[in-house]
Image 1: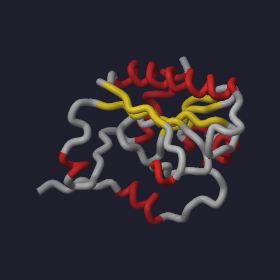
Image 2: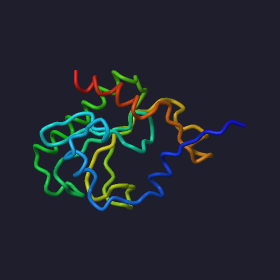
Image 3: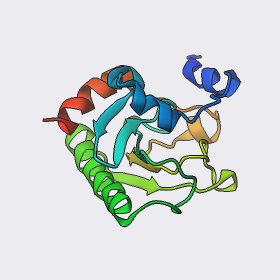
Length: 159
């Protein structure tokens, strides 16, 4: 029997929860590679999900702290959508996925892991990527180390 390990998930599950909003503190640190920030726009930035559902799972995050659309200007909302499209285009170039899940979870009941700061998820998908491991084994298999994924995506986002 083969054993597959996903120890990085336990860090999130059991680890201490941040007191401050990470979507506000990470871009202020200016340590983009360590913080997995791929791209900075005027009103929003693109960050890799540290605990991805699939290889290449990205998020578009406004710099403005809000848990809903309230307070976001039309300019910010437009940039969120444009960066979401940009993420899809970059992921197509880097990974050639067969499809995407794109969405926003507003509130804990909707599945928001970080409910205090609105963000858009972009998850590349391939046929068969949600196989028995996820549905029966309750385990996800990410095929590439997150730093390798960052290094593959960064030049695509920043030519």
